[in-house]
Amino acid sequence: MSLNFHKKDKIFLSGHNGLVGSAIYEILKKNGYHNIITASKKKLDLRNQQKVQKFFLNNKIDAVIIAAAKVGGINDNNLNKIDYLYDNTMIAFNLIHTAFKNNIKRLIFLGSSCIYPRNCKQPIKEEYLLTSSLEPTNDAYAIAKIAAIKLCHYYNQNKKTSYRCLMPTNIYGLNDNFDPNFGHVIPSLITKFKNSKSNNSEVTIWGDGKPKREFLHVNDLAEAVKFTMEISHRQFMSNSYNSYFNVGSNEEISIKSLVNLLEKLFNHDFKIKYDSSMPNGTLRKKLNSNRLNKLGWKSKIKLKKGLSDLIQTLNN
Picture 1: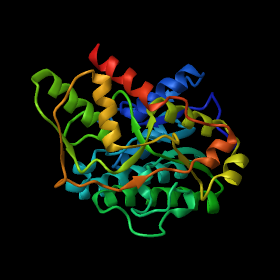
Picture 2: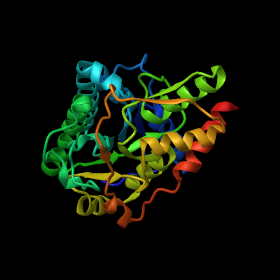
Picture 3: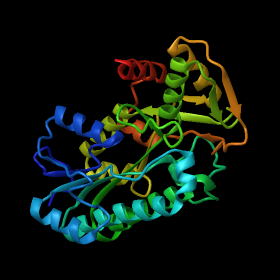
Picture 4: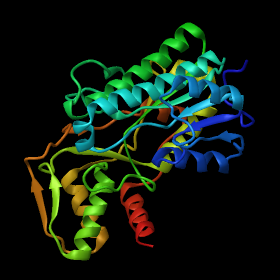
């Protein structure tokens, strides 16, 4: 059986309604992948191994993309660690292990840059994983993702599969969670700015604004998924580090500068307050994406353009 992905494959895309999954679905459809299998949360509980096995058998799946996960912002991660660890571990392990049991050799797993240590040397290389302690506010989510990466790598090493993992930086785009308290930084800030503009209220920013972040548009990540599917198994195994690539934009910005940029894009004079009693999270988190860049993938959507288009779409 070929270890390369093919456009004729019946590909199960989990999490197709989410921020990342919906973008992957659109990119693959546009590029000739017409046998994409999906299932809503109501139809299939990915935490249930028996139901996942039955679904795989009934649909005769050839390849898997794991975009399903429980995700949220710093507050939600910090308050609901049990759910983040249990749900994400069960989802990933069920899909990876069931794929192997059904002789499925081709799989893409999406992780996160939060897998890396809190005080990591910058920019972060893949080999810095597990070199020191994690950021405590999202360690549960990170541990689940790390375990899944390791499982994929061990299958590749011992069972000759082609389970390919991508570790994206902070993602933004449509179909995100725009809850001001539980969403990621960009969608939650956009909601706060929209609410403030409509009722002339103060915008409260968590932390002191000093942390720096690298942001990647979700469409760029979707292109990275397609790119990783289309390189050969030999290219992947010889260029990835322990079966995974970093995926970043190489564009870094402080939270304070992000707030200033959003203020300009909303074209409004806001009253802004920084709440230092709330956690900053990791102070800096910039990925080194050279391994994937050298193979030919690079992000295309600049942050200012991506944010401008997103705000315009949300306002229409």
